[in-house]
Image 1: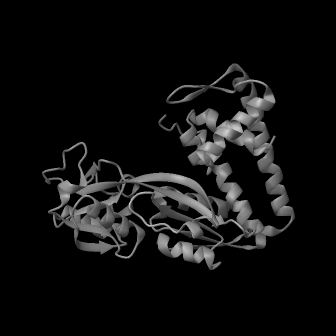
Image 2 (image 1 turned 30 degrees about the horizontal axis):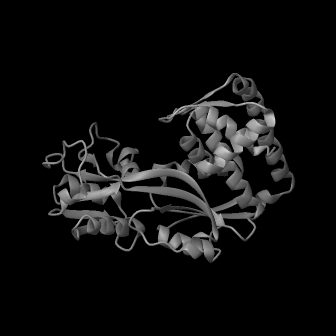
Image 3 (image 1 turned 90 degrees about the vertical axis):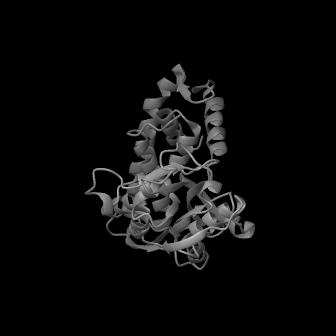
Length: 317
């Protein structure tokens, strides 16, 4: 049995949800399901009772959970010892990421890794998704965190087949409106309800900009983009002044940000869009080229950090 299955079992036991566990572990949900099934076959009994919304540990699962945690902890210890002994800690590691990384806790992950392994020559590059993939294929980055969506975007299957993509987290598009906007109190809106508005969007030429424009065109109109910028504070300012509405991702407006830390109340309304338009943040690296020891260690570190986080968070089932 692959020792990593015990880590996956531990995370699933904590989250009680296959989707949430797969997201935390950077694995596909179908792969996670197969791994748990393999464990159950080899152990000779079911580890989880499955319902339509969540899973619960069986008596066998409860018996195995303490051992699974010990195995996962031991694996962390011996991998770290090997990492330090082989002196790969002095190797360079370049990580590329989309902008506004604090809102997805990517900054927390990178900072913690650098603190735990200070001898790694770590460099980060912040660019839009469209450039990050070029950076990866041109070997300017070892690992990237980038955004993608199955909706409204063109894809390059040849490139995607050359990458290993591990889902990091999911986000969705929301409308950001002035508080006195007629739709500000709605529980949700459809994009076509905004067809006569002026828009503020993430910078022209980026993946978020392209997604928003194509989503609007699919809803039957071409948006009048009054303002576009990488600066979220500037976009929020345009909205609060009543100059326009914005289409942003939910984590852009639900995570704390410096510009509004001093405010008691959010000075704009955030309204979900129906039907929802989802995006996924992936951690990715090249499939057919071996990772450097430092990059491979970082990928494993991210998976272990996800497992540790699952012990303190209770996601929705």
